[in-house]
Length: 125
Image 1 (cartoon, one colour):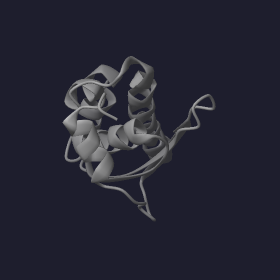
Image 2 (cartoon, rainbow, N blue to C red):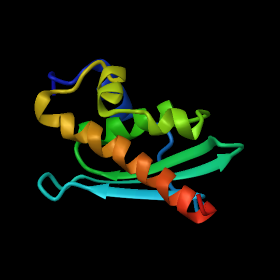
Image 3 (cartoon, helix red, strand yellow):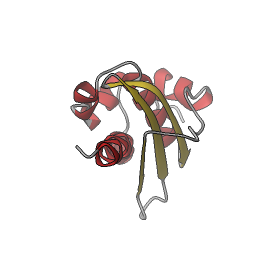
């Protein structure tokens, strides 16, 4: 696994914010049938900010690291800031990902964006 950065390996070995929020304000789930990765993000929102975020990921080291990093990047941020988060931002924060694993950074941001969309739908926005 030498082709992963130290940050990727750290987030894989010690994932942050892993778990589930039972009374989540928004839930987003995405998957890639080609590689088998599945990600679910749970968010709690207060005053238009992400107050808590958890995730469950079934996938490779990169998928788990991406989920962990995305959760850290979202925590405490406004919904506007988080909706602008891109796969390139996530890959950069992890000091890069191998080109064959870049799809994982898309999944992380997509799952979080779906959780925000779910929250907004529940709020009637």
